[in-house]
Image (cartoon, rainbow, N blue to C red; front, top):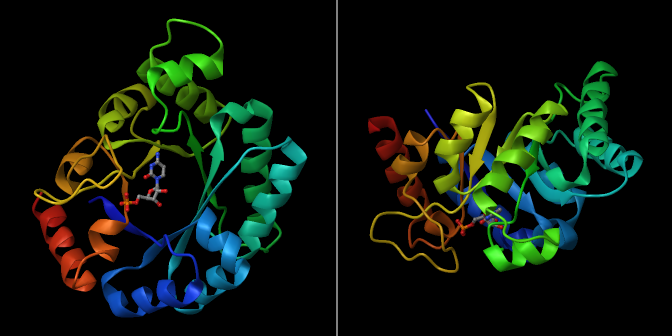
Length: 238
Ligand code: C5P
């Protein structure tokens, strides 16, 4: 069954941890992204680990291999289980990230190696923006996503972050072992906010997603724990 990760998109740790406490046992996995990490730093990851929660650190590392390896080691020491890097950082950068996660586990700094997820093309980019970034026309963004994902997995990445609409083609292209993590989840009849390419939890799970990253559909609900319990029921039924 696909597993839900709750996105903690908050400017400060207090409301984030208040939500974690409200969700209680209903949620065991949280995503910390750029906004919260830049504000609160490692202490928010420590607070989540202290509550027994699993952590997905979504900082989308993209730098020279040695720097990314160092960042992955630091994240591993915090007990982060999933983290993101940009596939466009190249094979050496991906290999350095994966190697650093494995070394951290071997040396006992982490209980197990963090799993490395590649970000391919940001889902916010239009076709013309992708063409401008890559400097060639025409570009088929869907094909670029598959190409970048396959390259990252070949270099050792464990999986990818992708829109739920890309999950099906990625699953066929990458095979059963790849981890597929999909944001852009909306409940049937719910608001889509600023997300353009959305799917319901059942649709994303059926397309082959292993983890669903869900933010506002739960964090913005009047009763977040009930909203999440409803999602868990639909996933069990799917
Ligand atoms: O509130 P919502 O469910 O849209 O939150 C989705 C989360 O997933 C946010 O933290 C957002 O930054 C992240 N994300 C995304 N699309 C991507 C990559 C990450 O929505 N392509």
